[in-house]
Length: 522
Image 1 (tube, helix red, strand yellow):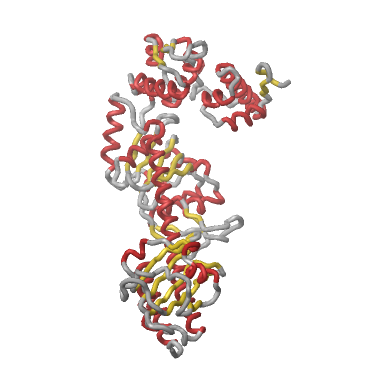
Image 2 (cartoon, rainbow, N blue to C red; image 1 turned 90 degrees about the vertical axis):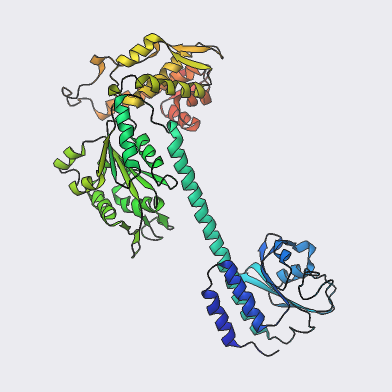
């Protein structure tokens, strides 16, 4: 056979470049090779461990694509894989043919025929093989090695492209799966439900239901601890974007120097430490919701950067020249009065109006009446599960005490009060008891204990004194948990809702050691 026309090989390469997907690309490759080298069967196989998997075939029975050829059981295929050059098998080769009985052009056993295999390499690593079979003896003997090498290169490039695309598709699916899982966790943690039947809560739920179905930007306000994040999760869950990601970014912890990278991503080498391409929060939230928590803490320079993205819907990753469009709904939350911040020049007026298309104010717990008891029941049940207690209940006096309290720390304070009370109430209990929480177990500030916002004076204590006071409080809390848990670190960590290793490091820093009893180093 004369040398294969180079024009034909160029046409093959161009044809492959226009292929739409892997199967189409494989089909075009085999058809083009078959035009250049007439044969009765042609198969491209991918190396998967110690076996070969057919990816596309022409001239073989349909079930051939479902087979997996273990190399130790098919010496011809093993020989091709061990070669670094096109390999011809003699017509009288005693090695069994893996396609015996599978050729469409011949029923039954294969007679004397021509067989050839081309190992396919990428970066000096074997990734697959291309096999050719012809019922005509000596069909492949006159093909120049140069032509076979060109066909091998084309086939290897086609296979490599297909494998890379498959890997990329798998990574995309994995990323989507991870985002979906993270979104699901975000939506369901802490109950994932707005608990309360008070008029204030009914108004809030109506506001959420009204705005959820739109794509309006929402600004959620309210004091610390009222549950603004839960409102965000509820809006996302009730929106048309509920199946898409809900991505959270804490604006208070956003470094000014890395803000653009965190928000919009960066390319490899864009700055020192940028070792790979990294998507930003806007890209991760594309199609879904971006939650800007503590948005009032953003520096002015970052505010202008964010405003441009919100106005245009376009982002430019750090280190890239082109911009890309994103479809993101923004929900922001803050415990600051942003109108006052705008008046003081600490927050951009144009960004405020861009975020506050639909403002929602979350009511403080003191305005929610008997919702306090509903929330207490939720926290009691969850705390009982964490402490492995049969049941926790509230006495009537404890219920009245909770209803009369002003709750400056809102829902978060209630959660902590219930957690501490459960620890105290269960200290001398026996497993299986129904444990009532009494007023004596509740640690609630009296009105005189509460700091006044109008009469508060500038603290005269130094930062060192504040640090010492904080460490003393942490030390006593850890010691109390260790005492309740009978000096079991794992149980103490569970009570304090922290990781055991973190608790051990914190205790070591505070000088807490356990020997026969708990003590503090002098």
